[in-house]
Image: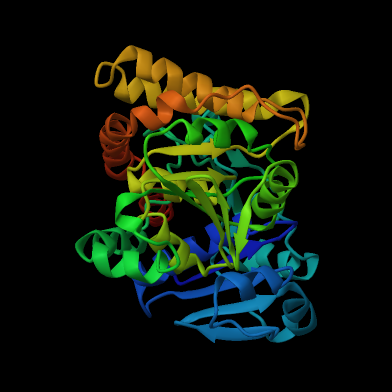
Length: 388
């Protein structure tokens, strides 16, 4: 099927992850099709998009880099002059306005329900299964991101891969740009920390044991508030936006654009990330990372985490010492074991992680290469639509 136009719907709830994914998909589709395909992103609200894209304005409709961004309210008020796209992407099971769908049933051809990322085995069975709509000519299919060739893959967009190469080729320049507030940064272990609510006592305990100075870049309100709780119980020096705890310094980073964040995580030595969007960005750096997975009731998130660990093991087993791999798996589980986000102290131990950073990075680079080669979500979407 020829792709003439694509409408991507995103219903933002309480974080930047959903719009982060949608923004990447839209930009990559625009790069692939240039001006041959009209691409629109339709958001239930604009606030989070204003934060991740400094070019965005608080308008109901605007064009940025050849992509149209508009709000649900705009299309509700203007459906009489607003034609539906022949391809619709429904991000994460969002609710598309009824006014739009009433027209789309007969005027559009295909709708893809782009689901959340999961590594569980059942994803392969549901990927590209049809959901019967029962009216009009419009057909709907589930598109399930994942970590195997039989799933929808992950967003390995060329824009990000190009940015990684640019940072690596100009590392000194980018380190000056992002680490300018850290004295003697070339001799320090540096990492980004982006989490939900988290007790950082175990992390700080194990970092103190290292024989080198450490700098942590604390990203996001919840991360910074969690560090403040640690500071209340421990003596720290505060120098502007930097807190010093012995040989560890923590810098509270201001909010970055999506592109700036992608540069930063390729500058540092390791990344602790949260959710889905920043997790995949960290995986594609090939650097050591730790994932704070989104917490769900009845420990459902632990099943999803185990699914990822199983897929990771399947690709790297035999290429890394078994004791290092086992310690990695234990750390991921201990770091995430919770029934709700609290500041309770966990059982995680980080010493093995930091003592094996070079080996972990070597193997993570191999895993990254596998995903780029076999699990490119954008290419899989493009191929499915064109063959539809």
